[in-house]
Length: 286
Image (cartoon, rainbow, N blue to C red):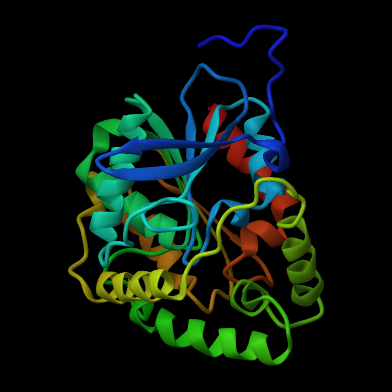
């Protein structure tokens, strides 16, 4: 559908319209923005994340020139149904959602758990994915991925005790650069004031953690089969999905590019959004 001049293109994630589509008895909540036409960029969100968890400083620059779609997978946020207890089943749901929108070729932008789901999807449906962005993530069977649950519960407790957002502990270093970057990030997530998403339930979080543990203990996939151009990024001190796993992905995915940001953690791409967003845009445009 071509956009006409009297139909202004929304390029601000804070103002992206909330939409739903129902397929196979599941209603998926999603938001879309940016100019239609061309290959859409579908965003795969992190553990415990919903539509409100995307940094507008990362999405908005991409949405200037690209059709962007962010969605809640099954059982997350405003999407109905139960969260699956395996990453592969989550990938099947993501595929179902993308095909329900009648898309036969997409770019994927993924972060953390979203990156696990993106890998499972591209291995099973290589024809669907043109380009792949994997951030703050790692491969199946990756060292210490099965410890994510312990780190997560520990940091949720630390955050509760200090009345702060767990992401400030999980995504950022607790140092002079990390703390202000964490607060700035959490504040940016509040820029959208209308149509906020439903928070993830405790049961959904627990099921996602179970799926992550399985992913961490499963047999590594043959990532040399991935032919889509791939951009990999992380901070140099990721406590959730160890930074060495980004290097592992880079070694195993042919022709992939790797960026590691200094003095930053799991949320390195958010801390360095001003450097990362232009790199991501350039990668998608190439």
